[in-house]
Length: 114
Image (cartoon, rainbow, N blue to C red):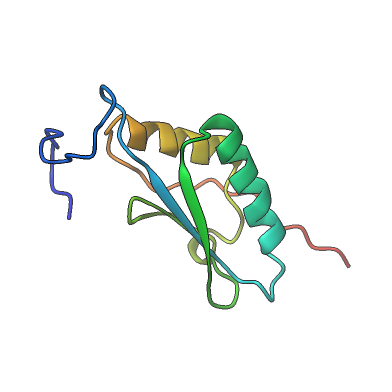
């Protein structure tokens, strides 16, 4: 549990300078067809940060939830859309620098083909 200004002590996993290890988990609804959105987002993250750990997990109906280092930073269930890549990249940058994470509240509407 984070609670205040972290000093960076006790991480012990070979931090390179001020950069910290970042792990992303994206939980998405497969029957909803959100796997393609996950793949697109994961590709953009890996292009920007090739060393980032990003994994997927199947979630409930309508879910597209993103955690960075165990902290929920985006929820489609709350926002009704998908995150912009630039907002996720910025959240990753903040996590790598040890800055506090904020929830991503901007979202692009899901594509609906009728």
